[in-house]
Length: 114
Length: 114
Image (cartoon, rainbow over the protein chains, first blue to last red):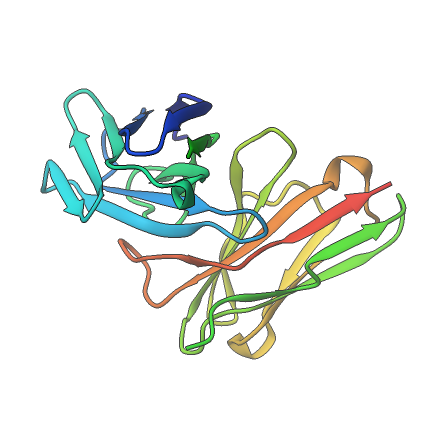
């Protein structure tokens, strides 16, 4: 099955700094890579995703980069703000062509200090 | 548009009792997924419905867990009898189509088995 490693497990930055979270995966057939943000008391919410036909995608202060050769993808948050504080999860589809069930990383607790 | 809703938000029961969790997906979403996060571990897939049919229940831990989706609308997940290791947060997600499509998550049900 799919194995997803996410690092770091915790990350503390100063407001305005950048934050980078990285995930590596094992199944080379994976072709969809979402990032979810979970705030306290809420469920995971999709913040950005990338398909395997592109190497980078950006949405305002959030970007995701994908390296299919190395089998890793990263979340980049620039100009961090206190409201970015949350747990972030990467995910990949489980089992090659089975794109409907997700395998998640263990999560990264991001703290943005004002 | 209402999101995925889950009930209850928190349930505390004793070992050996029965608990039923409910999930209402986004209206019109044929695909419904159950996931759970046990303390300190990653979010793991449990099962997937397409309308009222179980498409994949490979993640269900054992036969104490029973999921249903009668009529293809809301779903229930029953744990009977509950064990201590069943404690965790149970998430429901829904999506409109299979494949590379966004899964929207509910806020989860926190289950505590004492």
